[in-house]
Image 1 (cartoon, rainbow, N blue to C red):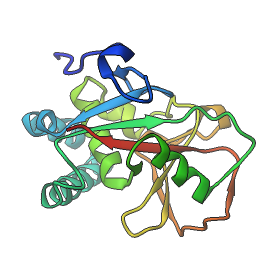
Image 2 (image 1 turned 30 degrees about the horizontal axis):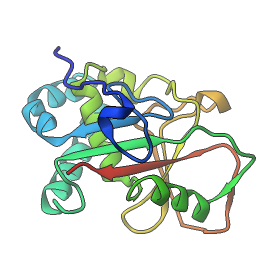
Image 3 (image 1 turned 90 degrees about the vertical axis):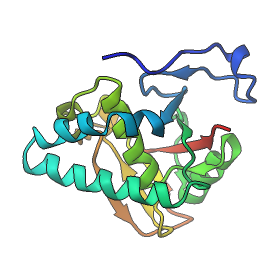
Image 4 (image 1 turned 45 degrees about the vertical axis):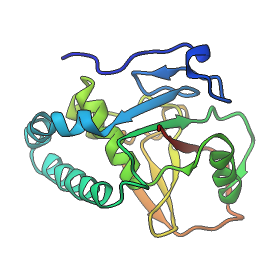
Length: 193
């Protein structure tokens, strides 16, 4: 499958963060989600999900719902989005502190829709459905997200913390601004104009 991303130098980006765009999701680098690529590869995404049986069918339903919400809210979910996973380099951060970190580098914290768009673009970029919702996540920390309802979500697994959930794992909780989080890391996004 053709790689749909181009890695750019920090100088080419001309962004305050001076971080490169990456074609593979990595800590400390911006990752591009192109919704046009998702639309063009919808049949392939569907096929990969359905091949995985019941769990794949559930994930496909989740993707369909996310795409519908994204299409109805183009100002919130533009055609190009970039996401950023912070390197965990602190003892703890509060939930509010994590949200503030995301606003300092982008437009805020990712939500479950952006996470589902990320999974779809990773499928388009050659990752298998098995890698995304059956195998343990290779990223070091679970990512903290802001749910659409204002709650706090936990996305993916955390290899560095012996949490072997797959990348597609999504757990929901209430938002507690003063809750101290010791092991997870915030997940930021920015729109690409």
